[in-house]
Amino acid sequence: MSAAARHFIDGAFTAGSTNRSFENFTPVDGASLGLVPEAGEAEVDAAVGAAKAALSGPWGAMAVAERAELLHKVADGITARFDEFLAAEISDTGKPKSLAAHIDIPRGAANFKVFADLVKNVGSEHFSMPTPDGTGAVNYALRVPKGVIAVISPWNLPLLLMTWKVGPALACGNCVVVKPSEETPLTATLLGEVMNEAGVPKGVYNVVHGFGPDSAGELLTRHPDVDAITFTGETATGEAIMAAAARGVRDVSFELGGKNPALVFADCDMDKVIEGTLRSVFANCGQVCLSTERIYVERPVFDEFTARLKAGAEALTPGVPEDPDTKLGPLISAEHRAKVMSYYARAKEEGAEIVTGGGVPDMPEALSDGCWIEPTIWTGLSDNSAVNREEIFGPCCHIRPFDDEAEAVALANDTPYGLCCSLWTENLSRAHRVSAQMETGLTWVNCWFLRDLRTPFGGAKQSGIGREGGVHSLEFYSELRNVCVKL
Ligand code: NAD
Ligand code: 6OD
Image (cartoon, rainbow, N blue to C red; front, side, top):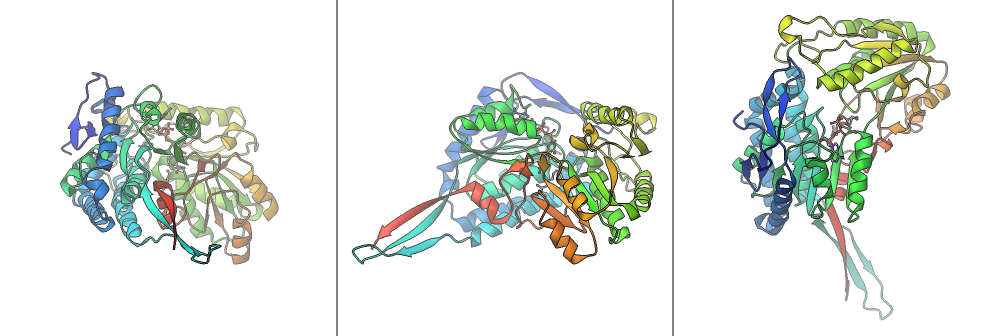
C-alpha cells in the first residue's frame, strides 16, 4: 500500500504535530508494520473542524443522486484496489486471506453501494389534517443530515465495521471523523486515498489515529462539535462513551459485546450444524462479536455433536494468512492472547473437561512471536462460571446438555448480553416458537452471520443501543424535521 498509517484530515495525509506515535505490530510474527502517529487535541480539533466546514461546502449542497454516485465511486475504488486493502487488512489482523477476501473487503465496498442506493429511494412521511376553519393543513418531514459523526471502530473486522457506519453516514449527507482501533490503523488510512480519487470533497471523511482513554478516542467523543457518535466495541467502552455523549445530549448508536448461545435440538441436520458451528465458534479466531461461546445441545445428540465439533476444531490448521490451507489466524495481540489464555486457565481451575485445545500450538520458529492459540472446547462447567458468563472473544466454546425446549431457552437467555443466537432444528414450528422467546437482537435459524444489509442489526440488553441496517441506519444518520403548512 502507498499510505503508511497517517491521519487523514481535510483531504490530506499528515503525521500531526504531537510527536507521539506508537508501533503497529502484525500478530502473525510480531514484526513491526511501522509507526502510527497519535492524534492530540490539535489533530482531533482540525478533523472535526474540517468535517464541520465540509457540511456547508459543496458536499452539503450536493443532490442526493450525485452523492450516491460518488459513494458508488468509493465502492468501485475499494474494489479496484482490492489487493491493497486485502494486504493491509491481513497485515494488521493476521486473519486468513481467504476470509478477508471473501468477507471483509467485499463488504467494505458493499457498505457504500447499499446505502447509496437506499438513500435515493427513501421517502418521507406526509399527513394532511383538518383545521377548525376548514382550510386544512399538510405536514411533511424533511430528512436532513445530523452533522459531524464520530465513528469509533474495533479491530476484529476493521474495514467492514468502519464502512458499515461511514457508508450510511455519508449517504445521509453527514461528514465523519473516524477513529480506527489502534491495533488496525491501515485500511481506514487507505480509504482516505480512495475518497480523494473518487472526488469526495475534502473534509467529508477524516481519520485520526490513537488510543481510547486520554487519547484520540476520548478527545473525539468529548468534542463539542461532534453531533452523534457511532461506536462498535466492548460494553465497558460503550459506558464510557455514553458518559462523554451525555454532555451536549448527543445521540449514540452502539454495537457492543456478546456471549452468544447456540441451541442444537435433536431434530437438527447434524451436518449443517457442525459446518455452521465450526464457523460460528472459530471464524476469525473467535474474534467476531457474533461468535458462539455457549452451546446447548439436546441430550440425545450431545455426544455425537461434541465428538464431531472436536474433530472439526482439531482439523483447523493455524498458519500465515497467505497460505490457502490456513483455517485459523492468530489472535489480534499479545495482550488479547493473555486475556483469552486467562480464561483457558480459569476453565481448568474450575474443573472443566477439556475436550480439545487449551494451550498454544507449536508453530514454526519464524512464527513463534505470533499470537497463536489453540481452538478450545470445554464441557462440565457450571452455568455461573466466568467462562460461561463473560465474553472471551477467542476460538473457544463451552458445550452443555439440555433436556427440553423450556430449559434450553432459559439457559440461552441467562446472560446480561443479547446480541445474537443460532438455533439448529428442522422443526419449523419449534424454530419460530423459540425465536420469539430469544432475548437477542438477532436470531439465526440453521445458519450464522447470514447478512442482508437491509435488515435491522443490533443487540438487546447490554449488547447495544439502537439498530442499524437499511432504513434503520438512515434513522440514526439523519434527522426528520416536520414542516406543517396551513392551507
Ligand atoms: P474496545 O471497546 O476496546 O475498542 C473499540 C474502539 O474504542 C477502539 O477504537 C478504541 O481505541 C476505542 N476506545 C476505547 N476506549 C475509548 C474511550 N474511552 N473513548 C473513546 N474511544 C475509546 O473494543 P475492541 O477490543 O477493539 O473490540 C472487541 C470488542 O468489540 C468485543 O467486546 C466485541 O464483542 C465488540 N464488538 C461488537 C460488535 C457488535 O456488532 N456488537 C462488533 C465488533 C466488536
Ligand atoms: O455484518 C455487520 O454489519 C456487522 N455489524 C457485523 C458485526 C460483527 C462483529 O464482529
